[in-house]
Image (cartoon, rainbow, N blue to C red; front, top):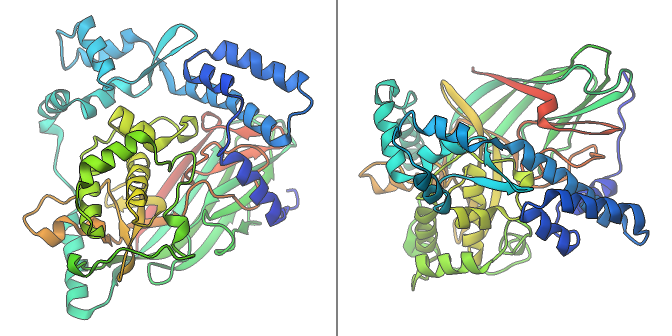
Length: 477
């Protein structure tokens, strides 16, 4: 095994600044990419990289990533119209060409035209039955015999959290101890034999009273670097080992941690507008490319908020508006120019897309918000998940999860639990998005926004998600 290398923090921050992609390559290139003219865009980029000696290193990286972005888009958009139709006719037998065109115009069927060829998002057909209201009913009816209901009594669990704070005043309660085993397996010969494979596996952040008692039990290989908790807001365990010919390269970690539920009962009458202090200012500002106050978002904000001025009531209105946006599987975040704008334009999104949209709308209205993400567990289910935190004066920072949204209940406090509370079954890796990894990654990340699956590279380049697999096993102790 090679010697683990510590990279200076300044190098991490420089690379993060470049790959945050607040700037863009030449406008004509982005226009070509966004209009699906991939061949022309590639030709121009290769020519610029070959001939324009005045390009800065940052400009070169952005152009190179534009090439990477196109490859990633092509990997997400592989389905033909015939394949999409074949899936849909199982539930809507008389589907016509006119139906498909209408659903495309309504943004219920996601596709791109790439170099003149129409290509549908890999999960477009299944997403159609999540996005279109009538199709959603058809799907529910067809699968009603397969739905056993919610296997975990979430409302009961969060009611316990709420009742505990009412009885004791303890904001953090109902702890759950978890054991996690997480592994990454790189395909055989994805990296030349003898070359060092570098791997970052997400690792829980220590958050006072919320996520505590984090104990690493083992790692493979044994030598590792755990990101210092206060160095970057996306925490990982770094591992490396040489690739072997004809063999897969495997990394793993096992650890335990304790997660606490949290709830703050909010009295709207006590909530006041915040002052833009130095501490809160970063959470009230635009952060391109995904938190930007675009005209579409401003219009939505004006329509939803109206004349309301109480920050908590404003947040409730925005929360309800984003909660109503249909959840749908999303393509890789690194392929988006602006995630919150995409959400409003297309009218659907997954948890991270919904969270960034809610964050942006709140910030536009003077309400501080920040990102949080990792995994969520509702025994026996689990999934990667994104949520966040929101600031109400005088209560301070409280959790929020707009994807879990409003609970279906007559109890008003329980209905709005996820606007100031969080269940105990969370695993928090990230307190921000698009943060630098430690040690610094040499090549662009596979996931440029979130950090939930991990990252892998070697000196010859990044290893994208189609070159390795991940697995998580967990146990409630």
